[in-house]
Image (cartoon, rainbow, N blue to C red):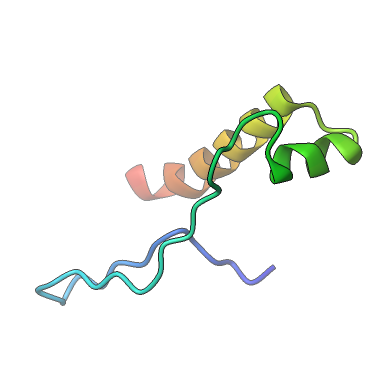
Length: 64
């Protein structure tokens, strides 16, 4: 695991720089990622929950 995050913040910088924005267009039950997850045995609702839990785990320590 590389330990990558969805964003990076440099406190000393004056201006934000956006290098790249990647989205998953049409994140619905019939989109590519959910279909791949389903093929691997992960239902759509479980996929969404897994993504949200991962985001919360990454952010929780920073807010303490």
